[in-house]
Image (cartoon, one colour):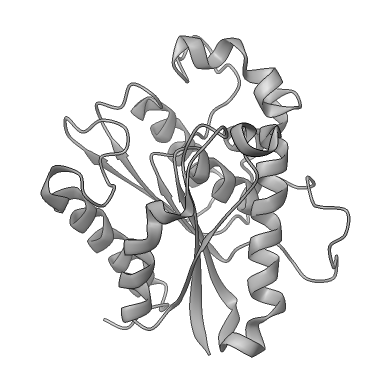
Length: 237
């Protein structure tokens, strides 16, 4: 039985393509994992708010667990991963209760066993005077979420007993400020969870993608992910 990883693409819950993580999947498959990149409904194609992105993300994790036997997956070693809005979707599968699709098998959990988040949107409601997203992103947020943003804000739902988490984030990110990853990681640790944040100096949003800057940060962030999965015994050293 092999560990599995499912990736969720970025695109502001509006757009994006599963192809974003094809190279990541090929890499983890070469290391002996079952690797998948999930499609989920987005505003531009399906007219859906972000709460449906989250429901689809939960369905994807559950689908892997439900079909674990068929694909040789260890149902207790499933990783949810994603970038930006996809990092938000992955985080919600591990942190936020509810928002499940109506037609799902409830006796099979949609909660992953670990999370790897690439510059994820983790704070979707005010925390003091913290600038948590770009100004123009905050204005229409309630409409884009389809619920009160706080209901889908991973930071606001941190508690003990959450899956071990790795976050890789550019320190020069202006789309999802690095500070939001810092306060999330602090909250996770204070609640007694295993959470590692790795910051990359001068790096903007999306720095980790395949094809960016000669793949230097694609490779660096993959190495961090590998180290994290080795520590959890999902990959051998």
